[in-house]
Image (cartoon, rainbow, N blue to C red; front, side, top):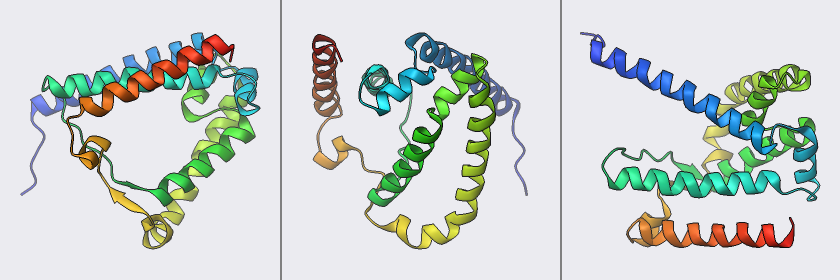
Length: 189
């Protein structure tokens, strides 16, 4: 017998969608304010002459890492780590990098650039996302039986791998990233 969703489940889904929309708008606003939706800044990053995007991403990594593990420690969230592998990351990175280099946007900055009214992001970006997604969905069954299984490491986090408390990884990594950000600012990058 099929189980029907309860009213609480429907409210939870609606709440999650509303929260996602709010955080998405906030994320796009911050990307735009940081300059990450501007082609010149992204092209400068790819040419290693403007490190604005790296600074934004490293700041997001530290904020997200501390925030998620703090919420986990308080029992507010339960982490559901997606399994991965080296080949998956390398292939995904190559596809992402090719699209990034060709158009000058990543999926997040495409959304922000569309919000700014940039036609290249609206046309090239959306078409690229749709075509790339369709192509990957078509090829996935064949790839999943072969190359995507290489270097599979499952859903292990670094704290699990080292068998230590989460904060023994989170705090030093956060400190190293903060030190790197400080150095980049001081060096004028």
